[in-house]
Structure formats: C-alpha cells, structure tokens
Image (cartoon, rainbow, N blue to C red):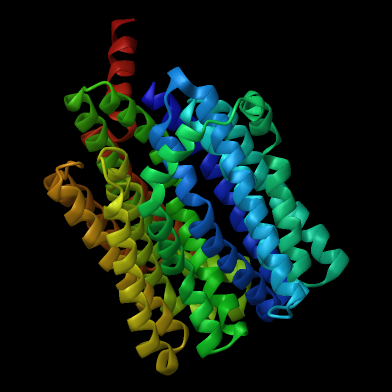
Length: 473
C-alpha cells in the first residue's frame, strides 16, 4: 500500500511541480522583476501569517485524528479554522481602517492566506483519511488553475495584487473536490473537548510554525528592506525553481510514508514504525542527493530558458547555496520535524524553528548590506543548517527517528560520484546537446543503481519480484 500511495503522491506532485515551475516562469516574464518581486513579498507575508495563525491547528488535527471519532474531530477542526480566518480578516480590515497599511497591501497579503487555509484544511482531512487519489486530483487541479488564474487576473489588473488574487482564487477552486469529501465534517458537531485537545497539543506549535515561516520567507522581506524589491524577483525565482525540484517530491514522501508510520505507532507496533521511518529516511537521502546533482548540472541552463538572461545572471551564484539550503530543509521539515507525531510533546519544533530564525536573521543582517542576494542565500543556508541540527538532535535524544548513517553515506557518495562523472563530460569534444544528454544519462544511471541497491520507494523489491515472475513464466 505504501508503494501505491507513494506512486500516486509523487506522480501527482512531480507533474504539479512542472506546472508550478511554468507558473513561476510565466509570472516572472509577465510581471518583470519589480512587480514579480512585490508578488513574492505578498506570498511571503501570507505564509508567515498562515504559519502563526493556522498551521499549528492543521498539524494538531493530523496528530490527534482517529477514525473512531473522525466526525467530531473533523467538524471541530473546520470550525476552528473558520474562526481563525474570520479573526484574520477582521484584523486586516482594522489595519486598513486605521491607515496602518494600504488596501492593496492588506488585500495582497490576506487573499493568499485565505486561499492557503481553504486548500490546506481540506487537504489535511483527506490525507488523514488516506484519500490519496483525491489528493492527487486536487494537487493537479491547483497546478493547472494557478497559472490560468494568475495570468487572467494580471492581464485584467496589471498589478501584483491582482496577480496574487488570481492565485488565491485558484487555491479555493482546486479545493472543491476536497471540500466535497469533507462536507460531512462541515455539518458535524463542534466539540469543546476536542478543541481543548487541539490547543493543548498545538500551543507550542503556534510559535514554532510561525517562527519557522519567518525563517523560510523572512530572507525575502529582509532583502527587499536592505536592498530592493527588484532584487527579490530574480532571487525568489531561482529559489522557487530549486524548492519545486526538491520540496514537492519530499512532501509526497511525507504524505505516503508518515500516515502509515503514525498508524503503526498508534497501534503500538514500534518495529513497524521504525521500519517505515527508515525507508522514508532513505527516500529523502535519495531525493536530496540525486536531486542536488541534477540541479547543480542543469539549473543555470533551465533558469536561462525559463526566466531569461536577467534571471540567469543571478542563478550562477545562487544555485549552490539554494540547493544546500533546500536539502537541509527537506530533512529538517519532512523527516526530523515529523518527530512531533511520535512524541508526547511538540516543543522540539519550537526549538528548531527558533534556531532557524536566529541563525538566519543574524547572518542576513551581517551579509545582505554587503553582498545583496548572495548574502541572503548564505543566510538561508545558515538558517536551515541550524534548524536541521537542532531538530536532528531533539529527535535522536528522544529516540523518535532512526538515523541510518551508513545508508546516507552510500547514497550521497554515489550521487557525488555521478555528479563528478557528469561534470567531466565538459572535458570531452562534444556538442552542447550531446553533452547535456550524456550528463543526464550518467546521473540517471547512478540513481537507478541506488534505487535497486537500497530499495528506494520499494521499487527495488518490486522490480526483483517482477523479474522473478517473468522468468517463472
């Protein structure tokens, strides 16, 4: 079942990632660096607000979900989210009325926050119920609607606020299949007791996820403040390209492995829980190692094709830093960060998030004034390294997550060797296209060997069984 769920999650997420990259490229070319930078700042602010106000509740719901009491748990979850969104809208309206922020700034920030809240709320309900096919449909629908909605809205308004409004509307429309699945929960009774459980479990996460959101998006806000809004455009485009390449697949792994690990843990099967988590760790090691190899070889050329020459100039210096930072983030968020579901306390997430923000803020304040976007990227590396280290130490201290170091070294070593051989293709007297095909083939061959050797996603065992059946026939 895990292999089937992983295939559905990863298939839908990879296709969606390709469409998301198209969206980023389309918006960057349509809007230009200045307006695209403003659009990215709206999204960054929305993610921070969402992190403080709503994400803790979403994670609390998943941690406390039980099929035996699913109706009241889901009903309370939906009503609590609606209450929090209502409070956010009221606060936003007050800031406009008091003249603290302009109407465009508030609208540009609050609309994507609402869109995220709607989609992620019903996504989480479907994930808890293991409705993987429905989730795949919703993810693909969102990826299709985001470029369409954003492009139409920008064509009508020509502003960053219009662009972000189109993207927010796309999130709400994409959630319609998920809302139909969770409709029974909307009509379920509210339970004050379950609400108190959410608050008890999630109270450390309110600060933890909010601080974590600052750590993930604050670099863009600082870059705009200390450099310029125009600098955020190329910086954000390169960062989003690399994040789409690694994080989307990692989210799929978390969606396919972690619910099964949590179910095994709830049933008291520690051996099965550790076996599933070990498989997940190998999958993350594979994604980050070989994903980084592909990115370092091909990202500069992809940036030039997708975004144009102006953005390609930024890619040359930023790609290595973003690649390392994103790889660290994958382990910190999707592996060690998942320990909160297997511990009685969620405080480890708060410690890791605080370390992320402190390290990132100090480094950014020191480096951005002198080095601009490169300084911001270095600050992101420092932030993710600090957060990953703290999360790993906390998870290991409480023995929540296995750490197969030898497997990691073997997978990473193979990826480094494949990347080195691919890089050596530049020494051969080959044309550009032939050289690119050879590089892709070398890294792909290394990846296939590791999939077979370490049974990544269960594919090694599956291919072995398939070969045995064919030989027997």
